Structures are given as structure tokens and as C-alpha cells.
Amino acid sequence: MIEINHLYKEYGKDVQALNDINLVIDRGEFVFIVGTSGAGKSTLLRMMIRESLPTKGSIKIFGRDITRLKNREVPYLRRNIGVVFQDFRLLNDRNVYENVAFTLRVIGSPTKEIRKRVPHALELVRLKDKAYKKPDQLSGGEQQRVCVARALVNRPAVLLADEPTGNLDPGTSMEIMNLLHDINIRGATVIVATHAKEVVDHFQKRVVVLEDGRLISDQERGVYFNAH
Amino acid sequence: MHIRSLLYFLGEALKSIVRNGWMSIASTGVVAITLLILGSFMVLSVNVNLVTQDIKEQVQIALYIDESADEETRAELERMLIRHPQLEQVRFVSKEDALTRLKQQLGDRAYLLEGYEDLDNPLRDSYELRTIIPEDISDVAREVSNYPGVGYLDYGSQVVDPLFQFTGLLRWIGLVFMAGLAVTAIFLIAHTIRLTVYIRRKEIMIMKYVGATDWFIRWPFIFEGLILGLSGAVIPIIILFYSYQVADVWMQSNIVFIALIPPHEIINEMVKILIPLGIALGVLGSFISVRRFLKV
Ligand SMILES: Nc1ncnc2c1ncn2[C@@H]1O[C@H](COP(=O)(O)OP(=O)(O)OP(=O)(O)O)[C@@H](O)[C@H]1O
Ligand SMILES: [Mg+2]
Image 1 (cartoon, chains in turn brown, yellow):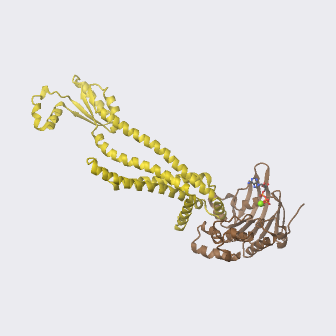
Image 2 (image 1 turned 180 degrees about the vertical axis):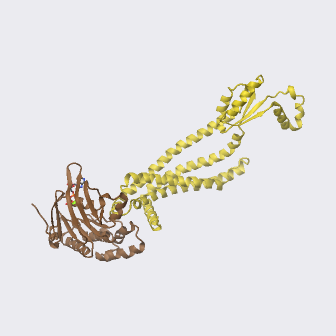
Image 3 (image 1 turned 30 degrees about the horizontal axis):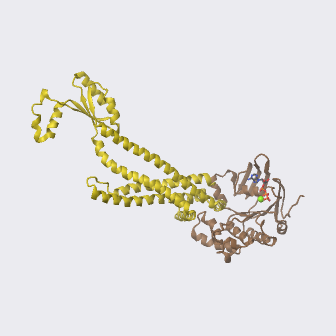
């Protein structure tokens, strides 16, 4: 489903953010991407949604090399990939329901569809009773659950999460990760970049380790890798 | 465009306009002032044109032939006049014709001219010349005066020259003034839209992540400019309509002999010109900002 070949990304002359990455991720997998700060995790995820182009190499998603997409095709790629960020990025002037509905509204979904899918997504993240609260009336964990609902309301085949628990305490982190795991079990391919060692060790999933832009380890049922 | 999307864009645009408050009012205000001045100019000029049209249609050059010119020179003069590209009409009026015409004008008193026929005719052979463009008349007259066999010219230069200079000057001042205001209007709208782009930067970012198309992101901003420009056009139309009606009534009761163009005709013209212009100013302004500040 995702096939990355000889991927390089340079920022200017000196920064080798990604250095010859090769990676294949199958449909329905759950993958952790770990590594020290500056290892290139976010850069790799950014390439997958065509936020920026690689210097060299190819990324095949759903059978197409997305580095060759025309600019006007990029939105349609992104409709199939949900994203969750460390800093939530919710719209504070709208309630939970509207934040989730936003995804569907801006891709022009029919109102009927929105009325059906938004409550369903909120139920999945167990936030149905908070639908009419504003984001600043919610806890950090709840806010992140809204983000997850927003990312999956359009039923993307792939869900990318960049340090989704970076701003959360360990207990809440585990709760969010369980949620992502549920979503994976329901069929989505989930890729999570994270620092949270105890979470990674707990789930015993595939772990890909980056260091200085290189892929140095890729293990099924791996644990958090610490080279130093 | 789908009706649902259209409503969404309109809603977002209206929300922004309300949120930007004074900036929106300023933008609309400048568009309104620009178009009010333009509209006033148009109202004035179509009415002045109505009056000057009569004058213009009457302006012609009377070219009197030098009596001492021989047949050959006369023939050469006629050939040169006919070939002149700026002349629309070259009509020969013999002195006999001129006398007949004068007699007709005198009517009952034509007997005064008795005895002037034939060799004693005091009038001269002449040409009546009309230029294609009335304003060219002075230039053409100057040129033609050097032709062979020309006695003298008469084209009412004292009246015609200042009139044309005045209307020409008026048009230029108007154009320059309006261009300045139009640029200001576009700039202000662009600035307002830029403010909106800034306020909505987070929304725009999320829209991009969830797969909104570039045009879906751009449209609300274009609509915002469009609405600002359109409101700026409607205001002067309303003002002009009412003030013109007042002027019309006043003119009819005070200056009976000048008929203004009827108000509804004027307003039809205004709507046809000012509305598209207002929309154009608004859309142009927002386009500039969207191109410069909306990185999609
Ligand atoms: N836009 C950019 N311009 C220049 N350099 C960049 C840019 N984005 C990332 N980098 C550099 O690329 C390298 C990889 O950054 P990246 O954000 O991918 O690391 P990361 O693994 O996500 O780190 P963290 O765990 O802190 O989020 C770093 O050295 C970073 O400084
Ligand atoms: Mg990162």
C-alpha cells in the first residue's frame, strides 16, 4: 500500500533530513516510527502527504508515485490520508461537532452525509456527549480525540499521527494510543511517529527506527530502540 | 459550482466582512466614492453631450475660393479636398446657389437682392467641408488654408476651439482622478482580504490537510472582494438615482429649454456600467491578495 524507494530529503546543502529510506507498509499495518529529535520522523510523514517534495526517490501510495502528482491532484490524495498532530490544531471558535464536520464540509460532502458521519466519528472517539463544547472547554486528551475524529470522519485508508501524545500525560497517552489501535483494527493503516517509549513497548507492533535521516532498524513486534 | 458550495462560500465571505468591520466599511466606502464620482461624470457628460451634439453636428468649414484663381487651380483644389482623409463631406456651393439660398432665407424680403444676379453677384463660390471627427476641425482648417486657390476660411473658431478644449480637458482630469481612486480602492480591498487571510490562516492550513481543493480555499476570499465591490457600486447608484430625479424636476420647472435625459434611462446605463466595474474592482483586489498571501 505504501512503498518508499531510495528517498532523500535535503534542506539546503548541509541538512540531510532523510537519507536513502526504503520502506514498505502493507494495508492494515500498525507502524511506529521512532528516533531521537531531529532524526527525520516528521519529514518522512510530511513527504507522505505531499506537504513537500523529496530531493530524490519515490513514494508509492495506493499504487501511484505521489511525488509525481500534479498540484491539483494533491487534495484528492489527502482525502485518503487522515493526519493527527501533536499540537491538536483545532478551530477554537467552533464546537467539537463543527470541528469534525469541517473536514467533510470543505471537501464538499452532502449535508446528509455529514449528519450521518460526524456523530458516528464522535461515538468512535467516545465524545458524543461533548459535541457542543468548544475545544478550550476540553482536556488535552479529549482535544486530541477530537483531532482523531476529524482525521477519520472521511474514512481514510491511512491515518498518520505525528507525536499525537507529545503534549499528554502517560495515562492519557495510552488512552489515545488505544484509540488509534482500535481504528487500526477496524481496517485503517496507522503510522505513528512518537517518543513515547512505554507506549511503543506496550503495543508490541512494528517499529521503524530513524537516526540522522537513516533507517537503522525495522522490526516486527519491536520495542523502543535506544542505540545510546 | 454546486449550490451547496456557493452558499458555503457566501456564508464564509459574509462572516469575514462582519468580522473585519471597519476595514470592510473603508473598502466599500472608497469603491463607492470612486464610482460616485465616475457616475456623476457620466451623468454630466451624457447631458452635456446631448447639448453639444447639436453644436458639433453643425460645425463645418466654409472655404471661399479665391476669385482670381483660374480653372486649373480650382480643379486642383477640388481634387485635394476630395482626397483628404479626415474630410467626410466636400460640397461645392456656387455663388449662384449661395444667392438662391440667401433669397430663400430672406423670404418676403428677397426683393432686396434683385439686380445682384449674374455678373453683379457679390457672393463667392465656396466649399462646405465636414470632418469625420468634429474635434479635428481646427487642424484640418489650418491644413486646408494652404491649399492653392483658397481665398479664406470660416469655421467659427472662436466658439469651436474653446468648447472642444474644455470638454477634452474635463475628460482627462476625470480619467486621471478616477484612475487614482480606482487604484486606492483595489489596494484597500486587497488589504482587507489580506487581513482575512491572516485571521483564517489556521483554518486554511487545516483545509489543506484534509484535502480541500485550492479553489475551494480561494473562493470565499474572492467572494468577499466581490461583495465589497458590489456594495460599493450599489450605494452610488442609489445616491445618483435620487439626486438626479431631484435635479430633473428642478430643471424642468426652472430651465425649460434644456431637456435632461430621463432618470430611468440614466439609471439603466449606470447599472450596466457601475455594477460590473464595482465587481471588477473587488475581485481584482482580492485576487491580488490571494495570489500574494494565500499559499495554497
Ligand atoms: N523546513 C525545514 N527547513 C530546514 N530544515 C528542516 C526543516 N524541517 C526539518 N528540518 C531539519 O531536518 C531534520 C529532521 O527534522 P524532523 O522534524 O523530521 O525531525 P523529527 O524526527 O520529527 O524530530 P522531533 O522528534 O523533534 O519532532 C532536522 O535536522 C531539522 O532541523
Ligand atoms: Mg517531529
